[in-house]
Image 1 (cartoon, helix red, strand yellow):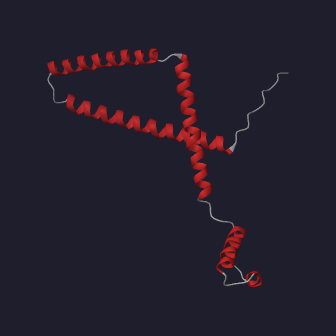
Image 2 (tube, rainbow, N blue to C red):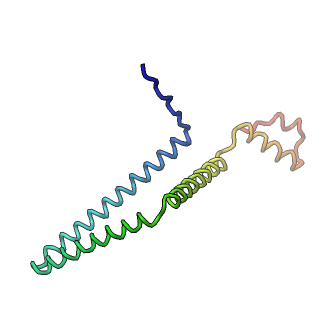
Image 3 (cartoon, rainbow, N blue to C red):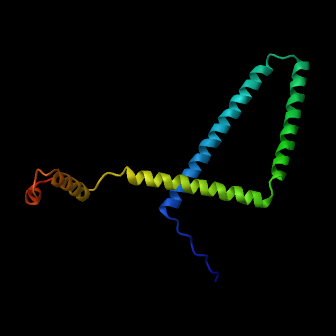
Length: 143
């Protein structure tokens, strides 16, 4: 008999954050795919109007660009140490926390008043304006 690991229960906030992160990743991937399709279409369109020598020059340039890109990416990967990567990841996580906390605070501020709060608010307003007494307010309905 094997021991099953306890399932981690995710809060609604964590689920909402994961869903938002997943949706953002999907949108970004779709955007990148679309840009790649457009770039390929442009290359094919331009390629149809070149002669063989021009085409070979273009292919050599593309190959050189790919090599340069790979070399630059390798330098970027080596550039950051593990501690630097950890710091950047922690910074990114903190930015996301601040962003989602701002969203939650704004949702709370924009939430409409409950019926009880609305009644109390209106009652206090009318009471302080001095035009009604407390007994008169109790008889009024603020629905």
